[in-house]
Image 1: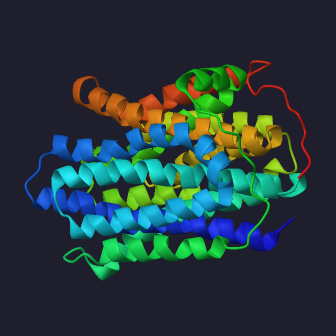
Image 2 (image 1 turned 90 degrees about the horizontal axis):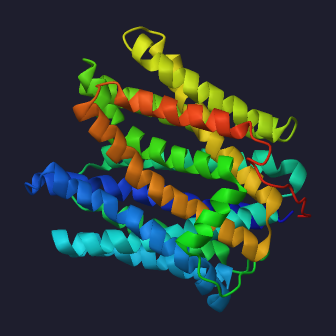
Image 3 (image 1 turned 60 degrees about the horizontal axis):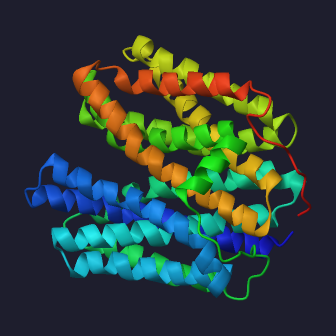
Length: 382
């Protein structure tokens, strides 16, 4: 186990979360200040999701040409340039292109970083170390907006901090070894369909969590306001969900090294379904606060366990390709989840957000009981 390499790769990926968290909220705030409406801001928010699908299709091919470690460093530097240009070129149409570019570039960082970590860890520590990655990344995303609140939004400091983080983090990867090899192959949506047929429960869980995360950041504050809470309380509730997601991944990962990962996965799906159904019933009571924690932890647990289960099954190029499919599913979930919840909230029910999550979790509970829901396990040595 190469501990130095593990923490170097972990730190590089975490720099992305912090850089995005401290710079991307500025984009929406600036657009609103410039007088752009909700639709224009929504289009800007959708650009990274489209970039995810493009980046996922290119990662394996480019990694085979340049090498996994080299490509990851180049992508981090490319992300640094893109974030810096947001400060230098404050124009809506330019920002659309830059956000799309960031989606492509940073998706490849996530694919390669998650593959590298899963390739490095030993099987007896896989649950703990993959969970540590998920927990730290969630905290880095939470830390970005908190840092932005400290430095203020009147100037471009958030953009420049993000630029500096992405420019320096590739230095941590110099001389590091153990990265997965990749072959020159294109990951298409047809390949994604095959992945979904092989691992349907894992595919469903990834798309569900992607939709969950996108909805939590965009629609949960609105849902809480509609329930009569102040903006401060609404943001505190969102933070509670994120903290629950982040802090409870380590216990879930530790359990994944001791008990059946498939049963733990099903348990998280049941917990997400129950907590989602309970939100409308308990939203006006003090019990909503621990419920938000369970809501975030159970959803985050599904994603962490999905990465763990993928790491059990694949190595090298197959692992890179599997994580490319994770990114594709993430992009699809980020696009469809908020659209479905937003439309349902406007035209069907004000409780559409928790009910949609409950329905998705119910489907996952049913699917996870199928014999081939998690595919065939092929143990691999680390």
